[in-house]
Length: 219
Image (cartoon, rainbow, N blue to C red; front, side, top):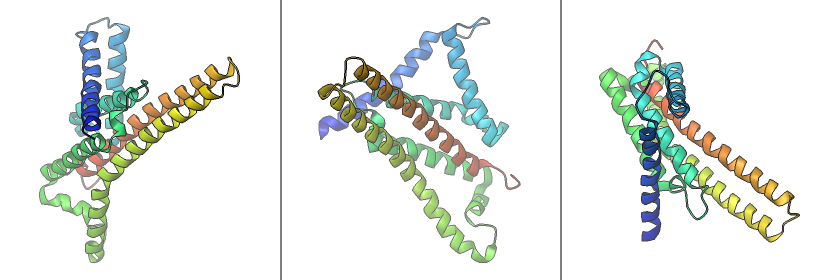
């Protein structure tokens, strides 16, 4: 049990080191950026547009956080595609840590920007049923880090197990020397697509939760 815990912590550190190393390799911004620099600039623009669409200009301060979460989740998912390695995001502890960061941040920001008025977000539109709405909203907000955690965990753990099973079936019962590699490539492509999708889902949900907390009443 101790080895498993150490493994997902170490792999989590690797998932943090990989994007940091890639960004350092890209070098300083230049007038004529390289393709590698253009790739990272494209990623930052993608995150920036995501935040602007959901939060407006006041949300730009959260771009570094969302971009960092996206990179960590993506590279963590990607490590799960390496034979013999388990994705850090296939461990509940890793996902819960990220989800709690998002949960604490958007609530802290909500109180920072709105003060006690932030509690109005939990009251609903009708003051007569405010206690009922408050209870429902509190339960809903407490469930957010749990759903963020379990969604990512289930997809990464289940995807890894499915990949192992399908690959073992192909290896043990190859239809032909041509079909087997094609089938394996198809499985890997689907898994790689899941890596992207799950990273995007975690990012967009984080943005939506932040937007709900920091948006003004008229929005």
